[in-house]
Length: 238
Image (cartoon, rainbow, N blue to C red; front, side, top):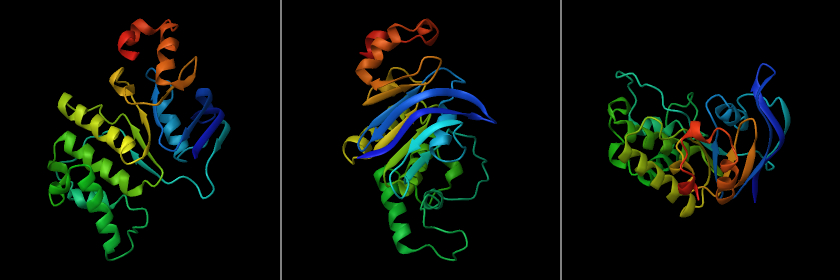
């Protein structure tokens, strides 16, 4: 089942394209890694896929009824006096939860607790979100994304602020969600080669776009003049 298909897509802001000539698709069970240098338009592409900004050109084909995706944005600083608990943050991902309702429905609470359980953070449910470690916060935010996700998880630099152990734990969790739970994944990453180690496909956003399998990406990178700047170990990409 095809979740989305992009044809000759150009994305950017105020009519100026940050990335263009993007042709790729995501099928059920895929794990797509979006890579490229800083400023290439990776996060702009994600915002476009989520419908937050319009495409400049091209087409995005979605299933009938739209795409029900969960989104984990780039990490941002959290105020120490942010009052919400981990459970309350997770509940905010329930798509059918309205801020105008006086009570949380039992089904929404169960969905949120199940997402916390799946990400290994159920024991943190009553703790202040702002007091959690960086890795714990990312897992709780992933639980929030799971509450919203039916078809797809979209992760924007999910390990950028994490220490090495928390990074490994996050990669392990996302791999498990993809392979064991069958959740389709799109992740933006600068972390080569670890960021594409579990990917089924890679989309390279830049002056020379590429879309193909992770194995095919190695041959593509070998031909790029900017390999040295990226400090990519080509043997590890194989």
